Image 1: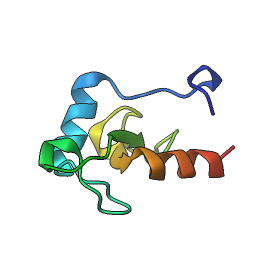
Image 2: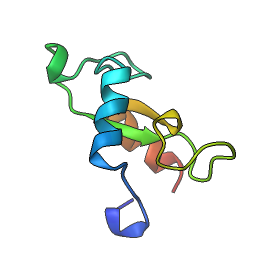
Image 3: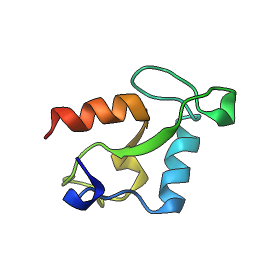
Image 4: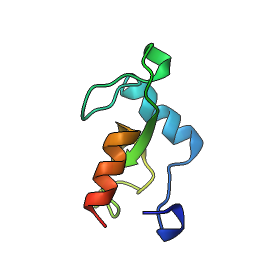
Length: 78
């Protein structure tokens, strides 16, 4: 899925809030980002595209995933 296919990221401040809340660790595989001495890039991932009770870009609708896990997850939804 390319970024031009309607994929939207969190605003920068919310992305940072999610990564910090999750202690810069992938919530699926447990790998650490560079902020904790790891060597994997992390991103904030939307848990639901159209959440029922919170704004789409609210931190409560986000989780931290490493790039490989996020890529696998996105491919599964194509």
